[in-house]
Length: 305
Image (cartoon, rainbow, N blue to C red; front, side, top):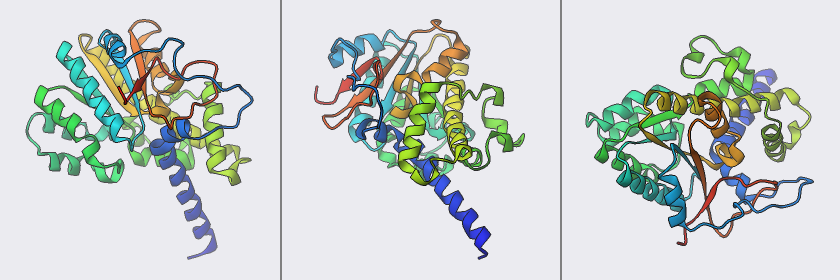
């Protein structure tokens, strides 16, 4: 292989690793690694401490509930299922919005919920094992409950092919075909300075050799924000079309903390203050908070309760 082609392949491999890191491990990194910053350490919980029962009483009143998970935590997924079940017990009109599925595969999810596909066929037709890769059994009980209770399930995420292209070539490289499953380019907003700084610190820690490459970081940022905006658009569109439904969003913590990722972008589309939202992070004794002067979420759920 010529040296130029080999170098190009190496760059693509590095970028792909960064994309996977941001999509699959950002939430873990955010809460389990220390980030260099001049700000003082802050407690990620609100000033008042809530029991899980207190939290549930608040969640059932919200239009949109964000459950920020660590993707490889079985306890997080068990808690998600318990929260969804309790919310559905009090209100049968619940929709589950999932980062784990990509938009082009919505019809496969709908067919599964309608009893037209087996669970094995759902996994195959959504290309779950290739596109998400975390064990299916983490999410299977949630899908099974949705099928049992006939709850809508929304495929939120951007197609992997589009995200990889943005990470390597930028938003300007997207074709009309690429844009079919994402919001208009004008809605891909990268102008939040706090979010930019947070992602820059993550990028620099995991790609030290590229700290001075502003173009590479901008594309990394665009790819991450593209995820956020695509998921936010899916949620906002559903809320507008189904005003009598509550929506429970399952996504990585990195898309939820401080509201920077998905929540603020949903709010932008629906109007500030027009819907009641609540965000929850799942904690364990090993969690290490980021430096910040405000809480990362409305509530922190304790697995020990």
